[in-house]
Length: 172
Image (cartoon, rainbow, N blue to C red):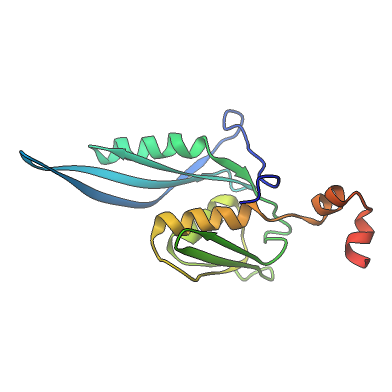
């Protein structure tokens, strides 16, 4: 992730909706037998350009989800959305998970599967074409999607970073 593009957001002043991506039962084998606990991946967002993900682990499912939500509120990023879609095509990668996100025409909907759909809908993106190219592991897909969204820039930001007029960005 390019650190200059990530815009961290404080969760205190925003109303966030949470979405459970995946929950797994994990076992720790000890001398006394197996000890089971739960691992939950949660995505939170305000459906208006702010999204974050978190991982929670606990002995109970509800505790794991609550911990995941708290963790997600600490990892919020701002995503540029233009007319309900993303500003440009973007590739994201995390470990074995790779994703491709493309802008779509109004009325297309969110064409993405599983973990990616949860992230894109929580961010408030209405129309997008997305494809998971690498691993289907929900942990890596969520992190790769957040990587792709966080590294997107709208035209205004590009103009500001280059120190040029907005017209020059489009017309050269």
